[in-house]
Amino acid sequence: MEREKLGSRLGFILLSAGCAIGCGNVWKFPWMCGEYGGGAFVLLYLLFLIILGLPVMIMEFSVGRASQASVIKSYQSLEKPGQKWHYHGIAAFIGNLLLMMFYTSVAGWILYYFISFVKGDMTGITNDASSQLFDNMLTNVPVMVGFMAIVVILGFVILSFSLQKGLERITKYMMVLMLALMVILAIRGFWLGGAKEGLTFYLKPDLSKINGNVIVGAMNQSFFTLSLGIGSMAIFGSYIGKDRSLMGESINILVLDTFVALVAGLIIFPACFTFDVEAGAGPSLLFVAMAKVFNNMTGGRIWGSLFFLFMFFAAMSTVLAVFENILACVREITGWKRIKACIICCAAMLILALPCALGYNIFSNFHPFNSGSTILDFEDFIVSNCLLPIGSLVYILFCTSKKGWGFDNFIAEANTGKGLKVARWLKPYLTYVLPLIIVFVFIMGIITFKFADNFTILGWLKSLIK
Image (spheres, rainbow, N blue to C red):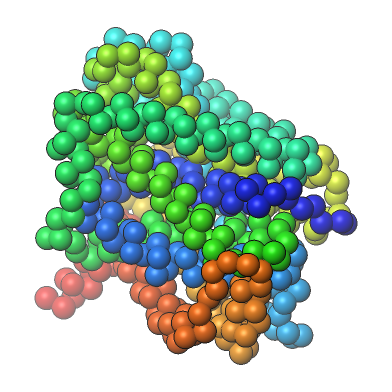
């Protein structure tokens, strides 16, 4: 099967950034920032993006470009005879499926809210009614399944065209429109009455708020926002040529991804402080809290529609990118044409995503962790706390170990082409320090996770010591 190629460098940057930019930036980052103390969390997040996210991204791109294959086949292409690195390729493929099993539902929520604002269903309702609307959406089976299905079908319809005419072209338009909407919404936020307080909370670090949970949260978010560890980036490395070095390209993507996350906060926190909405509202911040904001804002129907349109573009950019990764894996294994693979993958994803969509209604009595946890929480835990850090560790070891691809091969691939290069003096950090940090992220993410009401492994260990 002849491998498709992207049509331009801009297409590669926007596609890769689109994979990184999504609900992790505009849904998860703002509520985690609000919950973990604002500016202190932002400071740590930016630090971990540079020292953790950037190196792993370069490694994923290098593996993808050197192998010219999807995540399942890439290890088989580069590993030495008899090695077992390719087992991670299977785990990474499963990770992409798991990510989309809950991500498509969240994207469906965003689409539902966008349509509701456009129709005027949100106009004039009370704050209590705004909260009830979110609960009603979650318990409404046709709405939850229907909007999830729209996201899945729309994604695979776009991908059914060629790589350049489908994914690359649509993502370019979406990203440009998304960035324009973000700037407009952020400028509007600066004129709100609570902008000064909101920006102070968001951008002025209070170092006294830094603790173990904040550090681990910032580290996990740096992986989640870039979709690192499951080959979501590697696939786009396999679609580009060798005219540009991968460090420079990775920095461009990282800057664009960070810009979107930071501007999302510039939109949300001034609004929260203006209309007395709790900044630490948690996962519901985007939906319940922002719906309250727009209900109290002059022209709220228009601003709310624009906000959730921007959100939908961000979510769909990731959906399309990860779907393409899944599609590439399936096509390489089966040899199917793009349209046939899209139809079969679409049907499979509709089935796989059903448990999450039904987790708030038909399966609402199933609590995998604490009494308020859902199937979405379980799937998110497996991806965010387990597969992303472990997968990132595997990429690091594969690219630096003599028993893997090896540092010399990695550095040669990463530095091929014009642009910034990975310095060889970074080898000790990449080989020894970075893996230890990743192991720490993984262990702390597990032991600090709330598995039951007021129960964490860390809390249990502390009780034993006492």
